[in-house]
Amino acid sequence: MSQTWAQCLKTLKDTIPLSQYSVWVQPLKAIEDGKTLSLLAPTTQVKDYVNKNLKTQIKSAVAQHNKNLQIFIGVAPNINSKPSVNKQHSTPLFEDYTFDNLVLGSANQMAYGATKQIAENIKGSPYNPFIIYGGSGLGKTHLMQAAGHLAKAQNKNLKVLYVPLMDFVRNITSSLRHNTIEDIKAFYQSADLLLVDDIHLIAGKEKSQEEFFHIFNFLFNGKKQIIFTCDQPPKNIKSLEERLKTRFSQGLNLHLTPPELEMRAAILLKKSQNEKININLTEDVALFIAGHITSNVRDLEGALLKLKAFIDFSEMDQPFVSKEVVEAALGDLIKPQIKNIDVNDIQKEVAKHYALTVSDLSSKSRKQHTVLARQVAIYICHELSPLSLNKIGKQFGNRDHSTVIHAIKKIKEKLLENNEIKSDYDLIKLKLANL
Ligand code: ADP
Ligand code: MG
Image 1 (tube, rainbow, N blue to C red):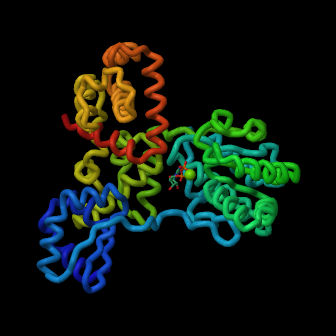
Image 2: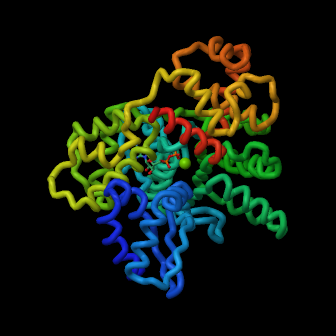
């Protein structure tokens, strides 16, 4: 770490509240080159927050220790992103994604059992292809890779290939340029177990679908096992060739659902003992956190990391983490859920956010910006107000309930694929929570 930054951290720890320090300052990576101190945030959200709220304090701390340094605040290249395609067009399995590291609960019981059975019987499983589908952060990649580890542990000569779908698409694209499509196909066709992550992303990519169809048939006819993950049942994927849909649906399709309360608490307890986290949670406190963070496992991991940062930097010496510490460390994450918010408040906040008026939201305008704001407002009303779809429609210029359903569906999709809309939505909800 940069010497200057190490000194600044001590100063900053005394000058800004600990909860802000641990969440926003501590994750910054510092690189110093004599002229500039570059502070690299793990995400754009952290960068923006630091720039807006903490830059002055940081500047004055740096000036105290080294007057000549310029400060640059940016975003670090994503060090957590999975390794990109290697020369062999596949990605190594992640070490930790094993069955041993998975917590079992009713949400994943069936998928866990089926995956294990397939991995133990790779050459003769009746479940081919096998598709694990469900929302983000629920453990699909982990489960699929656990199959790869187990199959390999049983037979080290087995060729297990793991490929995230977008890497596959990139490989196909580059092979078309270099005229090496046959090599690529031969490579994937040499697998005994092919693991394709996030297959839904193949939607609309015609050339990749065509090549994939041939690879799939080759492996399937050769009785080689294929496992996919997908964010929805494959039969629902739009812009996917019928022949692929049919192939995918003929296999076993299993749904991974969000973990229930006890499973979430068990995951927290297991992960808190991991050497990288290493904090002492009681079951009560784990249940308390699990009661508030209900979305997915990735969010539970995020909460643990935040908690760890808080504990490390507050130099606590109690043997167990208390609920008060959790509240101080996780702040907004564990605020009571906001519900029953008045539609007018939602309309006001959304209109303000998008620099429109409340009446724009109810108007007949079809301008793209207004339509987006209107749909976001309808979506949030559906989520946070007790009103029926019909009544929500009435509040937006007497629109009928099919328009409301359409808006909800649109925003649901956009929240998954568009970070800008997701952060607008998060911000509006944060404001509503603090009304
Ligand atoms: P997905 O592919 O569904 O988006 P991942 O497989 O990447 O989700 O899982 C997200 C994180 O949650 C990973 O770190 C994974 O190890 C962890 N995880 C998911 N399910 C479990 C579980 N049942 N037990 C322990 N960790 C889990
Ligand atoms: Mg995944």
